[in-house]
Amino acid sequence: MMILKKLRNIAVIAISALAVLPASGQDLLANQAPIDKKMKAVDSEMLRQLIEIEEYDSPADELYQDWDNMYAHRETALPDSFTIDLRDFHMPTASRVITSNFGSRWGRQHKGLDIKVYIGDTIRAAFSGKVRIVKNEGARRGYGKYIVIRHPNGLETIYGHLSKWLVVENQEVRAGEPIALGGNTGRSTGSHLHFETRLCGVALNPAIMFDFVNQDIVSDFYNFRRDSYEFDGRLATQLRGANGKNGYDPAMVNSTNVGRSRDVASSSSSTRYHKVRRGETLSTIARKHGTTVNAICKLNRISRTVRLRPGQILKYN
Image 1 (spheres, one colour):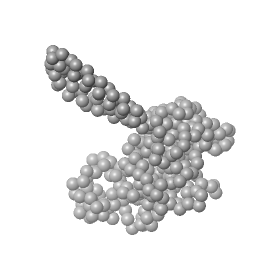
Image 2 (cartoon, one colour):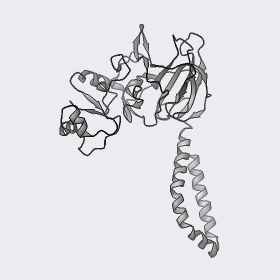
Image 3 (cartoon, one colour):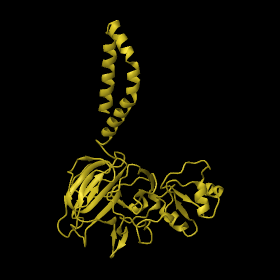
Image 4 (cartoon, rainbow, N blue to C red):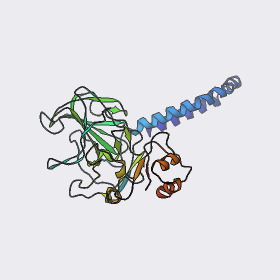
């Protein structure tokens, strides 16, 4: 709150100075009122940016009590529920090719998505945040050259098998900012980006939040619920994506409560979903799936006048 205190002190000084101005000086200031009104929006934007910068001093305070540059991830106490804001997301790569999904692979758990990139391709920060780890696990071991970034929305993202780092530890980065170059370091059989999303050290399937094929988020927010997951010291149940094909399946995602993976999976055989594309309306969606606007509204508990967002998931059956 130091920045806000400084702003308040500046305001007090300005008011005190105005009180001692002669009448002519006060008239001159009064004549500047129209200009001051025009500057109001600029001042508000500057204040917003100052507050935003201040928030990065201690990202995700609600979930994390420490800041350590030693370990890639360490599981800590998960909240019963937590809403993750995804609106700041930027795809870490323009590649749309998923070569390996989240889940069981070769007798072990694969804790992220493998995305096809070539050596030297630009890798970007998925969200704004602060770089916690820049490290090399060595030849043929784990992540190889990797980066861990902690974000104010509660997530930490991991970028593995890199060929070159473009950031340093404790550096603040913005969503979409270049942080590394793609590579083939560590335990890797070919150049690719290993991308993980973790909450309190626990790996979450990136495919239930991000649609790499369409380069978009699944929904504006991800509602994590601990009781929707089963643990025995590690994550045991999550959505697996589109039958292992591309890491994402709109028919397996419920935008109002994505975190309830067991509920969604158990009902997926009878319930169908539609991902809203730009320009679509309730009427066009209803016609496409042979249903009615009223039926869609009832299923999703929305009104006929609701404003649809690209990427929003709607039940239609």
